[in-house]
Length: 81
Image 1 (cartoon, one colour):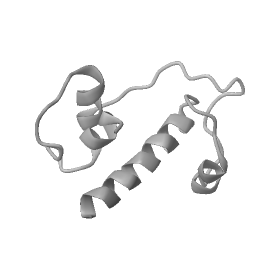
Image 2 (cartoon, rainbow, N blue to C red):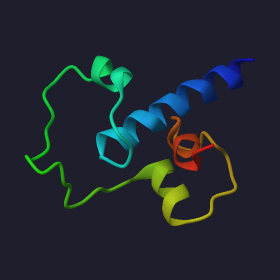
Image 3 (cartoon, helix red, strand yellow):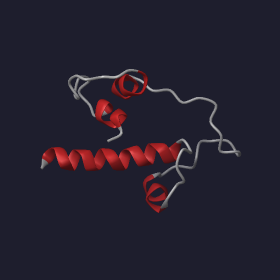
Image 4 (cartoon, helix red, strand yellow):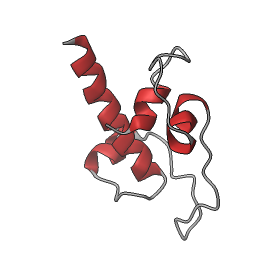
């Protein structure tokens, strides 16, 4: 049960992150969550996005180890499932 709740939260966070970098359209939940003005330029274009830690492990390399190697949800977040 605890893992299912964590995975549900991570899924929502994944969606928010994709919206923040304009990969997915922003929805009402995103607008409610974000409490500051958008930090992007007028064209809503990003020049770069970088990833580190567990998220980077799953984006740049196949990782088949401890999901909590870094003591956070980065690897689970990077898996995208």
